[in-house]
Image (cartoon, rainbow, N blue to C red; front, top):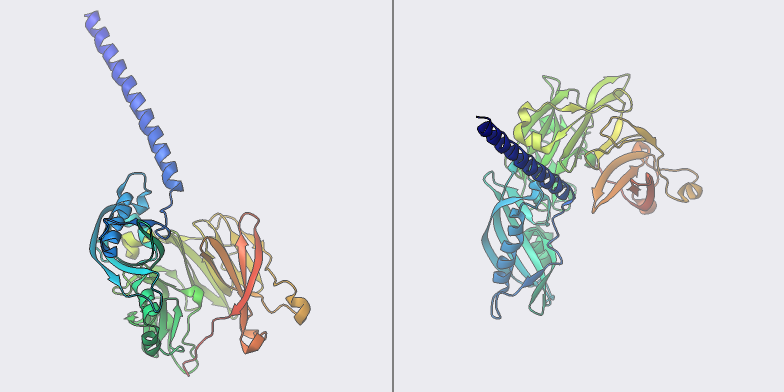
Length: 445
């Protein structure tokens, strides 16, 4: 009897030991994988080499073969989950006409559908430079590859949206169809325009427009002769993947996010909280989305609240989303002139004459010294740039624009300008980049 008991005991110990070893191995592999995912970056298509399929193969065939292999790599487990794909399908590929007198480069357009392995976490559409649309059942991607022939294949010089190729290939046609520059406000291909009745968005430089439902009533307010048909550049996000404005339900005194995931085809609403109609600011950095909006007014000043969430949570159920309050350096600071996140933890808030920064999502704040353009105050006798108006990240660099406010009187060559600075987080320092034309408001009257 004792021998059988001992055998069972020994087997149990062996099983327990094996399980412990396997658990340790899995834990180690998991930790290693998480570290790998954290540091993972999807390589750029630009600069890659497309090999010839055969000596007599077409450039379009070569690109299709390369694209299938390249995107197929995103199905591997070593790819960070937000970039993983479950399938890739090339729908169409064709060679395009040369651009102008440039016979040295080859242009190929490829249309494909990809499916994210984890749709609620997907970020692959932020990459490459292609035109992308979320169709609900997948992601349609259209890419134009500018190729430089070389021995044995081609080098990808540039990846662009089809509309960018069309502009380069037929500039005269686009000049003829270009909308009135006082009507839309464009940022590259993405922008908006306002009339007395509609707010519309474009994703192709003004060739086509999508209406924001009740956009004037909810986002702009009543339009009259004194209304500026213009929105502060820090008050909206417009990209084919995600577009957002701050709207108002005057009857319920509720502030809302009015947004679209599919380039303006459908629009959704998420309630941010109690508030009032005032200048508001929307910012997206990575998966973080933050909104600063007018909470209440007293003695002619507007007090502001800030909330934040993630794009993943907004996509999951924006109507039921409980936005997180972000504490600021004081309760309801007044008359903000800007707000912007530069990563998941860093947020800048500006007022006339001051700038505050938090590096831990609002837990603590520090007051930053407004940067100055070197030598300008000595030349003018005063410093005209004292109102922070925008902060954003471009190609890995954080930029801050400082304007002149309502009393703008510094206008070299007759153009009101703002000052642009770059920001280095490691040294917490700004460096002057240049003066540039300030955004100009368009009056309805």
